[in-house]
Image (cartoon, rainbow, N blue to C red; front, top):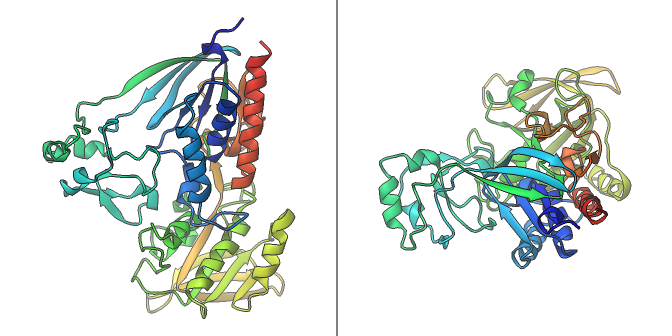
Amino acid sequence: MANNETQSILVVGGGMSGMTAAIEAAEAGYDVYIVEKNPYLGGRVAQLHHYFPKLCPPYCGLEINFRRIKNNSKIRFFTLAEVDKVSGEEGNFDVTIKLNPRFVNENCTACGKCAEATTMEIDNPFNYGMNKMKAAYLPHELAFPMRYVIDPALAKSDEARKVKEACSYDAVDLDMGVRTVDLKVGSIVWASGWKPYDANKLETYGFGVFPDVITNVMMERLASYSGPTGGAILRPSNGEAPQTVAFVQCAGSRDENHLPFCSGICCLASMKQATYVREQYPDAKIYIFFIDIRATDRLEAFYRKVKEDENIEFFKGKVAKITQNESGQGLVLRVENTATEELNEIPADLVVLATGMEPNTADAPLPIEVPYDDYGFVASQNAGPGVYAAGCSRTPISVSEAVQDGTAAALKAIQSIARR
C-alpha cells in the first residue's frame, strides 16, 4: 500500500491550468504541491485586462481560485521556485525544488514601508517593462501571496539596511539565499505555460525601434486600470491618444522563420482589444490586418459583432514592413491587399503586433524524459508514466480551455496514484 507521500501530486506551474489541476486534486482529497517560478500565482491570466468568454476582469476568477487554495490545507505552494531534478518512477518520484530568495518572509503585511524606504527602481515585469517600479515591490495589487519582493540588486545595495529597518514586522530577511526542498510524489502535472514570441526578432516591424509598435500582451496592460497608464490606451512615444490603431495578425506566427504554427487565440485577442480602443475613443479608426480569421464555436458571434462596427476595418493582407512617416511622428504599414492585389501604405498612430504563444518547455524542457512535438510542446497529455502535461505546455489554448485541460490532467494524476 502506498504511503501518503507517494499519494501526493506535484503541479508545476501556478497559472490557470496549474491552479485548476491543483485545486481539483486537493478537493478530491489528495495532497498537492504547486511550484511557480513567479513570486505570485495566477500566471499570464493575471496580466490580462479582460478575458473570454465573459469579457470580464481576470481577478473575478482568480480571486475564487486563490480563496480555494488558501482554505485548503492539502495544497502547499512554492513561489519563486523551479523544479531542479526529477527521478524515480510513477508512484514514487523524487523531486528537488530550487527556491530563489524573496528577501521577505511570511511576516509581511504588505504595508509598503520597504518600498517607501528605497529610491532604487527597476523595470516592471508585470507591465512588460513599460514603466518603472520600486525595487521593493508587490507584484500586483491582488498578488497571491500578498507579500512584497525585494529585488536582488536592492538586497545587495547600500540601501538594503535602510529597507530592513523600515519594516516594523521583521519581514525583511537580507540573508535569504537559494535553497532546495526535496519532495516525494506519486504523479506530476506539468503546466509551465507559455511566453509571447519575441517581437524583437521581427526586424521589419520595428518593435524596440519605434515606441508606438507594441505587442498584444502589452496592449492588455495598457488597457488595465492597474497598468502603466491607469487604463488609458496612449501612444508610448508621446502619451497622446491614438486616432488610428492597427492590429497586425500572425506577427511571427505561421512563418517557417519564426513560429510555424497558429496559436489559435490571437485573432480573437485582437478583436477584443479593438473593443478596448472603441470604448475609449469612439471616433478612432481601427485596422485588423489578417491572413484569415479564426474564431471558433460560440465566439463566431463575437467576430460578427466586431465586424459590424463601421470604424473597424478587416484588411486581408500580411503586413510586410512598418516604418515611420516623413514627420517621424507616425507609422506607416506597407501591405498588399490580397483580395485586390493592390499595394497599400496605411498610416497608424499605434501598432499592436499579435505575437503567438511559445511554450516555456521549448526553452526549459522537463527534467525527465518526455516526448515533444516539432514546436517544443509536450507531445501528449500522457507525457510518460505518472507525468501529465496541461494547458499551454501541451498546446496553445484559451483561458476556458486551460481550465478544462487542468481538470483533465488532475483526473489523470489521481488515476495514476489511485490504481497503485
